[in-house]
Length: 284
Image (cartoon, rainbow, N blue to C red; front, top):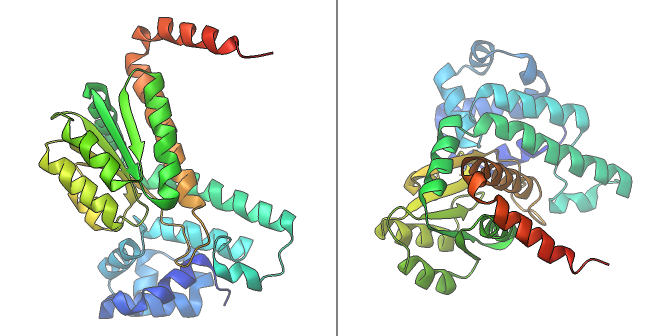
């Protein structure tokens, strides 16, 4: 069987499954190409497991439902191994063009699946929290930092006092001067990055609303957040860089920005026009 992203992820976490979940894992490792055509009941019977254990298994590896797992498996088996950001890439015969196609496919899949992982009600709560906030902190480490910077820039454009950082010591004093009702937006695909968890914990102690963009995996960050904006878990474990998760993070940031602007934009048109006119002076 091809070493697809899902197959590699299952093998990586095989020791974390319960006995019932292990039955599901073993079946997928052996007959994964058939799973996209099966119902939950059919898989339960074939794997000698319960339907509830299948649901728990899916959540364990970062998928909200069995249906979502089937979609990813079907795409992986039709497109070939999608671990384009894994060290296993060195063992492939891919050309630059084929890698371009695979990266594009992975990014498109991240966007498509985010429609299923992100809760409509949680997203609306996040927008309302931003509308009420005066200050916004954005924090991410490593590959999760660039979306935080972009978010800070976008929020600054619509009048927010916003700060983005990947430095714990830089962010602590900013959070200290924030008030109840302000917002911190935390970025972490795994939800387990220590610096992000520590910053979120300090923000909660200050009464600040903690919003996280993370995967649906019951991580420490997921559990402590007031609002969770869940993205799909599509990254290889030993990756050479953030690709799908960065795309998903960026997409959520863009959606937040547009939604916030939709709520408060009438008061910003004059400032936007002034800013655009001033920027145009530097164009030749």
